[in-house]
Image 1 (cartoon, rainbow, N blue to C red):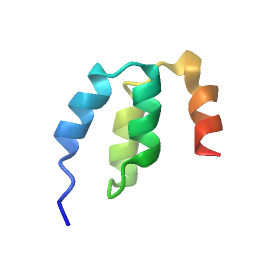
Image 2: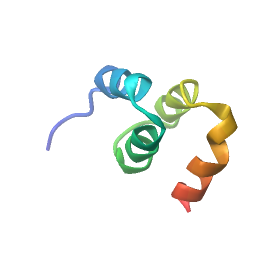
Image 3: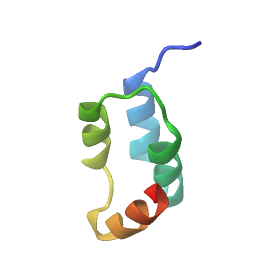
Image 4: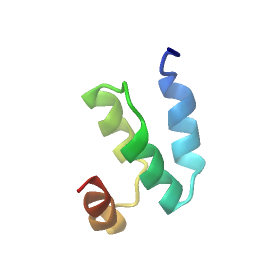
Amino acid sequence: MSTVNFEEIKTKFINADLDEKIRIYTTTEGLSVNEFRELLKYYPIQHLSKLEKALG
């Protein structure tokens, strides 16, 4: 089992397009609540409903 490298995930998330941001956010395991919150800082708030829908 590999360890989660948050800084690497964050960099990928920041540079990703919207669909890739959603994929990363919904499929990445092993992050803390604070790490998920950190990712949300880099998510375009106007598309939040799309992320909410993907989360189910």
